Image (cartoon, rainbow, N blue to C red; front, top):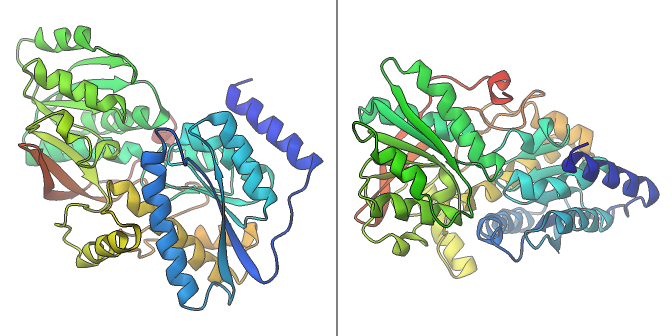
Length: 395
């Protein structure tokens, strides 16, 4: 029995022993079981702030089903065990929707608490296929786009637009998100006629040094055109810094987990570095509504969005509220049925599709952000040529 399975059994037992309080008929409750401390706060807080903006907009327009949305919170402390407790806490407070952390590994314990109680859960921005039906259950969704789509996007874009032909795959094995980026890359690369994988290696996020991996890259007959780096914070900074300090000038491709300028001072004058984003925090998004949202976010919170992971929080509340309105109730089964009818549902940050097979996005338009001389900005956009099949996502 896996650790995650033991959590599910424990949570199911707890739910049977102590049924959660019912929500008040005159209000709708959204419960945030997210990180208010620890490193996951850097991902969770911006998305939660964006969610609060959408909640405020809905309340100002008369509420949801004529009722005001109220919020309850519980801190997971970036700890899996605390995450389970936080999930149960907001369920017991009567949450109609349980919002959990931005990563499958850290959000799943709270999502399992919601699932065992028959509540809809939304990962703020988790990007593993397990953050949904496959890893939690039929009431669980994610507001973001699969990590595999990021890896596939960067491979196809670099091949098509930058004429990259030789690739080196460097995987940080720490989280399902990281593995997902490389899974998408692995799915796409064989579809690119003369693209070649010239080497691959792994490391761990907490590794102080990746000297051995760098040595293997430098021992290649020629430097690869691109390095597919599948990692996230906090270890991403160290890995990128070491690659450039070693004199490796290849394009570095990564997933959305390293979007943001907040860490760039640690790698002065970083160039030839590319990531996919759902919306730009840099004031250059081609959609003026996104730029307007960024201004509103700053006015409300006192700071500009720090990462593209701000945006899925807004999307999450938007699509869930639409499903509730169409269902005419917050009852989980009815809301799930409405969510699963959504096909290219318009949102401020791109369309969303959910089906009975997949509560995630397996194809999406991404903006491509390049960091050049330490300054990030949008240089292109790309949508992968075909959606990634669920069977391939589950490999």
